[in-house]
Image (cartoon, rainbow, N blue to C red; front, top):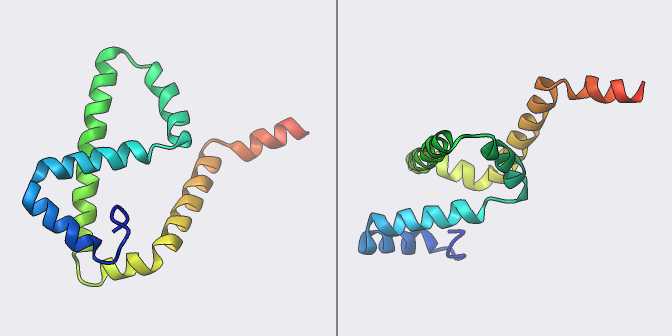
Length: 122
């Protein structure tokens, strides 16, 4: 729906998938993945990727691509469970906010960020 921007976007997406097959889906996933790679992701991944050897970089990118397909497949299957799609549609923004806050808190706690900041202050 977000790609097409209208209420019948899901039907149009299903129709195109049936007409054009898996190659269209792969292209769409690739475009969404690249488009959603914001500055925060670049800031995380670039320093990590430059530390890898060419072999490890290729392995990492391959695993990354496979996991994207697994994630999309799993999300599609979960959305088809009766009630789940409606809940995500209704509360998706709140669910994402909770996930981001929890992830941020986990990173802060795991890396002893509070202690480090207090060490700079005192």
